[in-house]
Image 1: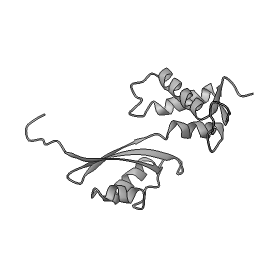
Image 2: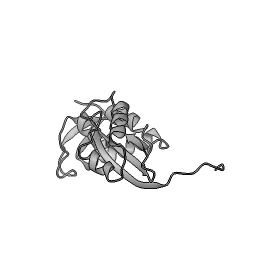
Image 3: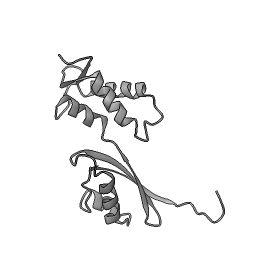
Image 4: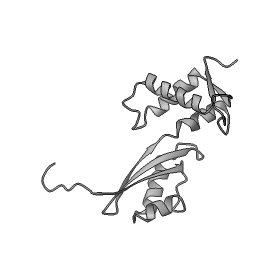
Length: 152
């Protein structure tokens, strides 16, 4: 590190799920960020601007790094794998007994498309597409969604 440059001290790490383009200073965003004295309107404007090209009802996972000088940075991840699987299968809920009943069906093409989206997430950027697909298939199995080559 060069002289004269101070590294910011992290005050908190806040994880939120906020619908795309719908961040408001009301709960859950307001109380979570307000207790760390962060600028709520700046977060809401920036988040809504970054997610304006995504459907409004899509839940986005946000990680906010609050610094001790009351500034912040945040990263937005794509929705959860189970959200995408349920949308692809056309269901609201997974199976209550996943190993014994099937809640829905998706194709290998659906798995591949979800993997392409998840590949841009910071957690998955160093994983191969095949590894991401296997992980998604495991999630599908755990919520009772069957994966087939083609739909009949």
